[in-house]
Amino acid sequence: MSRSIFVTGTGTDVGKTYVTGLIVKKLAQAGLNPGYYKAAMSGNARDEQGKLIPGDARFVKEISGIKQPLDTMCPYIYESAVSPHLASRLEGNPVKLDMVKQGYEDACTNYDYVTMEGSGGILCPIDFDTEKINLPDVIKALELSCIIVADAGLGTINSVVLTYEYMKAHGIEVKGIIYNHYHPGDVMEDDNIFMCNLLTGLETLARVSDDDTELDIDIEKLTAIYR
Figure 1 (tube, one colour):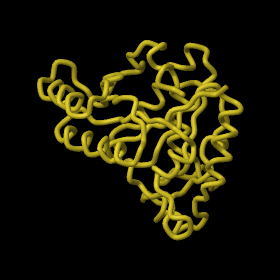
Figure 2 (cartoon, rainbow, N blue to C red):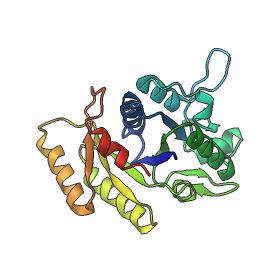
Figure 3 (spheres, rainbow, N blue to C red):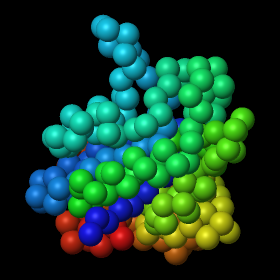
Figure 4 (cartoon, rainbow, N blue to C red):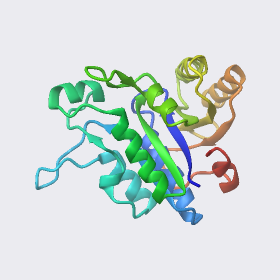
């Protein structure tokens, strides 16, 4: 039976995709048949034939080395670099929850560990004009637990605690936090991590520096957060 986790962030550009790529790479190196999935991606470029390429999915595929076809990784791809709900308003093809669920179920059929990445932060709307879908609706519909990716730097205490409190208030299980852009020995960043753990009760799963190509976490600890 396939096991899954949802990766959310404290905001846009905290490095969810980079961290997700390292997670999937770790699973692949352990021979655990991992797959990747994302409900909606915006801000994508086109290839020479004019076809939109899911950039986040391509990055994860390249860094992890998995063979999963790109066209199975994300059902909704937009060019506009805005929230998916606005991108679909501008470009058409609004997100449908049934389509997201079907793609997720297909991934679970073909891969043993499915890592699903969110769009932006936890409050990112992915459809507003038709079904009014926010990321928590997707997480609950797919019965997923989550990990939070946060920037280790200035401001992270506020963003981590607010993200966690929102998720807790909405009945979303959080397994722990991965801190990105971490500088070993930085007093402020180490204190940020200490305070976030103290205020949320969440475990630090890993710290990721900008030049890291591997995720520093035991494979047993990593697989234990999937369900």
